Amino acid sequence: MNLAELLAAGGSLALAALLGVSDAPNAVAPLVSSRTRAFLPVAGWSVLWHLAGGLLAGTLVARTTVGLVHVPARSLAAVLAAGCWAAVAFTWAATRLGLPASASVSLVGGLTGAAIATGGLAAVNWGGLEGARVFGVVGVLAGILIAPVAAGTAAYFLEQVMRPLSLRLRRGAGRPLRAGVWATTAAVALADGTNDGQKAMGILTASVSGAAALAPGGSGISWPVRVACSTILAACTVLGGRRIVVTVARRLWRSNTVDDLAAEGSAASLIFLAGSVGLPLSTSTVVTSAKVGAGASRRPRHLNRHQVVRVLATWLVTLPASAAGGALLIGCSRLLR
Image (cartoon, rainbow, N blue to C red; front, top):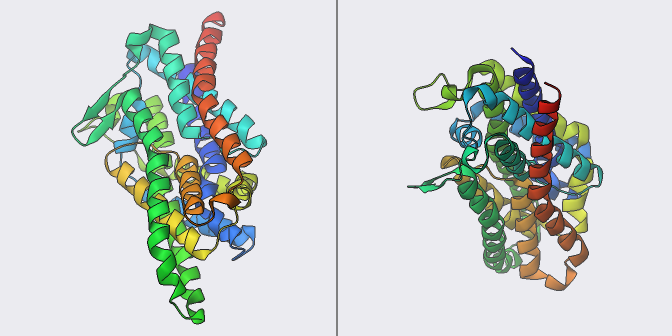
């Protein structure tokens, strides 16, 4: 492996770590907000299901991720490396501030900026919609932008349906409802492991074996790559995700069991649906939006609007900042030649 390939491989593993730190912990936020358990047992639950999701993942999301750029084979590793490290740098900085920034959006921005710096606008696969499958930057960004709206809307209406039903239940029904929260958080973690895990797997596979390995009829994602990326993503849920969990769990608004069921059920369904058509999604945006949607349904005045605006501002800055970072890293690599 040459230097560019090594940097791309290292960047993919760093990306898996950042996805674990920034996106994955959002899956278990409701267990913290409801004070069902302390953080470490909840994080262990998250690790288990994220690891399972990564090991069971397919290749559609990985194929879409690598397919965002259209550059010659000799330049692919450098573009992947720059895109990954730009995403890692921005997401790490945002995470240090306790903001649920999206490593997925950062990756799209980083890869786009690196590709443009390498071969101009033609080096980016702008894409769109192909049947039921999205591809390219436009298709992925459209999905990422629509997903939070869909998650918030679904959680809003699901909350409207569930709340009257829950009020009719006996007091002893609280335990099954809490068990339902555990089940839905497991579903979100499983869905996130399949979706986020494939992004890092795709970058690592393309760095080692070339983009052709992810094409139909290719060798696909090898088990060593799958195990490495899944393990790192799942483990980093425990190592660095506590501040993000607290932001989503307690600072947007104080939810209860029914709110959490509505939010997590909506988020899990949407992430699974996106993965089935190869759309890379951000768990942080989907879960946060679902939580806001559930909150707006029951207690709109109790939403912490300052925190909501702060999160939205982070999402808006992510794409251009990461694109600039990817282009800058490509420029630096040229100076070092």
